[in-house]
View 1: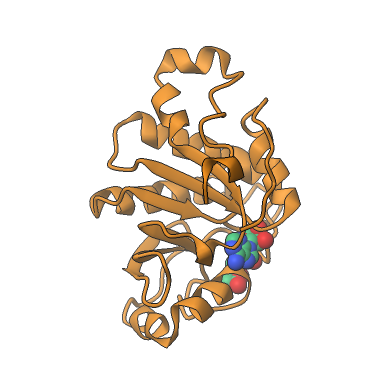
View 2: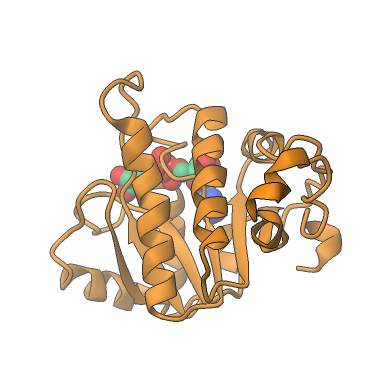
Amino acid sequence: MGDSQSTRGRLTAGLGKESNFGYSGAMERIEIHRGDITKFPVDAIVNAAANSLLGGGGVDGAIHRAAGPKLLAECRLLGGCRTGEAKITGGHNLLAQHVIHTVGPVWRGGTHGEPELLASCYRESLRIAKEHRLRSIAFPAISCGVFGYPLSEASAIAMGEIRAFLAHGSTLERVLLVCFTAETYEAATASFGNAKKTPVFL
Ligand code: APR
């Protein structure tokens, strides 16, 4: 997972006035990748989970398969998770040390609090990562699969929350957005304006 396979370090191009607001340090720490999030050796990967935290399809299913049954056993002790909130577990058989489980909103047209709930997923996951003094975290496109959130709107929210969080000081040195599909990757890179696209799948 080298820089040749991501947009790391290329994202400050074309930012214009945003750098005047102290975001330049934040931008250096954000990477956009294509791939399977279970393959990333980071301190924590984020799971787009269900309220029960007892597994499901999509990225949730992939994470539970890769982590093994001890992840489900640990999740059973957590008592579920409200939409927009997040909880942390170990990574078990994953390369990642931790999994931060968050529950995104189901898209119902955008007028049922979906933007604020999705923003909260990113904020809460980042807050927990900071609380645990983690240095790297990888996000999937929360709510953008089964839950139906439009990709471009979701990625704009993700970028806004991540950049704002990093701009206010954090232990996090790397925040990865891991895009499973080409469409997700396009949406994520579009949120950075002129960012160069390098869609290599890991
Ligand atoms: N790595 C990275 N991203 C992945 C992976 C993977 N291995 N597998 C799927 N994705 C992507 C999807 O392409 C989508 O862009 O994750 C994004 C989120 O899709 P879902 O997994 O369907 O999550 P979400 O829309 O938040 O729905 C959550 O689905 O599986 C259930 O238990 C889960 O009920 C919950 C709901």
